[in-house]
Image (tube, rainbow, N blue to C red; front, top):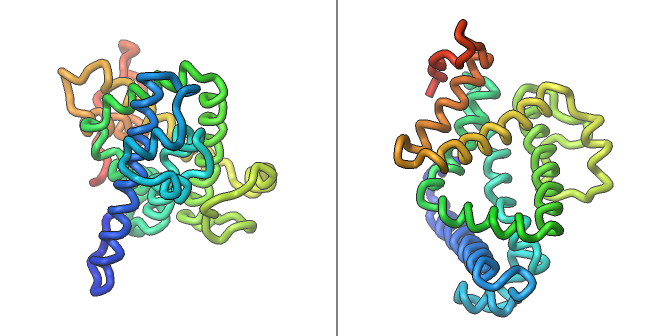
Length: 239
């Protein structure tokens, strides 16, 4: 979400950027150490040392060593939820979601190597992979709640999507959500994954931003097929 400059914003913005940089440094250190030595040989002390912070600082961002591999997008997901709710009223829910995700994925081309390393680390660790899927599902519920708030059908349980929740809350949260918010949240998450995977094998042909834009154009068009069975040129989505 774009920052709006106010008199009190510079210090807060600087602190937020510093926190984001520290969190990113811890994630990168953990992923690279795991890629080099295996997850089982990576310790909090080693991650902290490589990131240039203390173990105490590590635990300001993550509750456990495993969380640095699993909860890597918590702050980003919170920003996406907030941006969906705060997007201009003339945006459709799909457009609001697209814009929010685009901001968070704007540096994907610079981080592509780290994304691939992270995926490889998770594939070699079934326990972490399973936990990551669970975290993504929980994030999807939160995103669906944000979409529900945006379209005026917010959950009676939550006026605003909660920053964190327990697994025991999942069932009542799912019951409180309508079909459309859940579907759009799931489609948005899948669209991001497909865009990243498609671009990763075609980096020499196109920019990630173009792939991402085309994915959402196809969604906005309703995914129609051309007579020859191929996808027709997607219509543009308002920007």
